[in-house]
Every structure is written in C-alpha cells, then in structure tokens.
Image: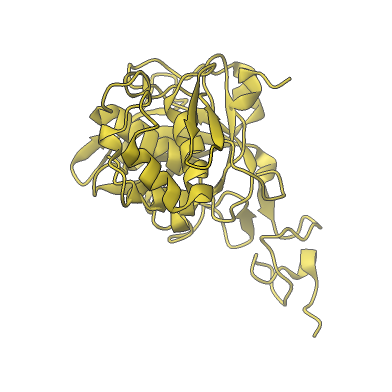
Length: 301
C-alpha cells in the first residue's frame, strides 16, 4: 500500500501543457513510460513524481482567485473543465496534490455523470484548500509546485520536494530521504495567478555537453522548459534555510517569492560514455548527448 512517505516521490508528466492550461485558468493555478502525472505530497515525509510538460498549460478562462475548493461544481468551473476534460483533469490533479493536505480529496462530477476524485498531498495552501481565497503566498507556492512537477520530456521520475507551506511549516523530510535524493536540483518560484510568470534556478552545476537528464528544467539549458524562465544559480536569487536544505525565498524583478526546492536521484543524470544509450542521447560521431558514439554508436542509414 502506498503511504504518504512514498507519495512524495511521485512522477511528473505533461508539465508544460499543464502549466499553460493553468495560466488559461487565469489563476491567480517519470517512470520511463508515459502515464498519468502524480504530483508530490506532504504529511510525514513525502516524495513525488514529475512528468508534466508546460506546452499546453493555459489558464485562460478560469479565475482561480475565486475558485473555492468547496465549490468545484460551480458553473464557472464546469465550463472551464469541459473545454478540455483530459487536460483539465491533469491540471486539477496537480493543483489538489500541491494545495490540499494529505488524506483529503476533492471531487467533481461533470455533465455526463463522470466523477473525478483528486487526492491531496503537500498541503501547501491550507487556507485556499479550506475554501478561502488563495492569498499571495499560497498562489506562489502552488505555482512553484506545479512548475517543479514539469519536465522537458513529459516522462515520470521520482523527486524529493522541499520547502514550507503558506503557514511556514516545513514539508516533512527524513534524513534517509535526503540521502536517497542526494542530487540537488533546482528552485522553482513565480506566480501563475498573475502575469509575473514562472522561474527556475539550478541548485548545482548545470549539465555539461556530455550529460543529460530526464528532468532538464533546472540543470538543463536555456529554453529546455519554456515557458518557465531559467535564472541561473539558485544561490544568486534565493535565501537558504538554516540547514541549507531548501530555499525560503527567492527574488526576481524586485518581487520576493515563496519557492519550492527539488532534489533527484544521482542516477537520473545520464553521462555519454556510461555504455547505455539513453532516450536523451542519439547516435553520431561525437561524445556529447546529441551524438554519443560511445553509448549509441554510429548512425547507420
């Protein structure tokens, strides 16, 4: 049986599409095989999985600032959801996972009588989850959480999510989790509920030409996770907590945000020359990921 401890390491997929969809809602919001995204979680230690891609994620049409989690069956929500039920369902799965506490669910029944049940996990927005309007900090944390569950390839991969909820309570994390997810990855911040946008910084050395990753947003190259803008080192924009485990705030364009910090497994960074032709590598005459002869061989026409 899956516990809260294992849920924090779920997977992310369809991220880009989901983020854009969230933006259409005008919010104020990777196993190796593609499957439904299952975001992060809180309560006890929680790991998560990412796999979403932001390319279709638009929030146009739904004002999340007025969305109360105890009123999902409103006409406004139904109208938005029915525009693209498949994508909207993924978006709501992300939102509820990020905003609602572990152990709680949110339910919606569409006009055809189909019922959707979404599970809470991280509980980053306790006031919004209880039916109140999302305040600025909750908007920022839900936005950062959604961004953290996106990756370039839309595949699922386990991640460790670090940070604090809108009341300042840390996401529970054990030492064992930090050791398992020993590779520091990135900081995600911004606000999808406003025109401010989303940002990601690297929390370690960016990937070299001979390296690649199923993730790629934080440690990858500029443009790898558009529309999330890369800002360079997290340390240059963010303030760490006293234990240097995660960041408590990040500043961009004069605005200070509540961020989410991520860690991954070291083995989720691939190296050209490790004798395995990863899906992020290609054949050719070179030693970089675009043409990794050592792992993928020569291209034979």
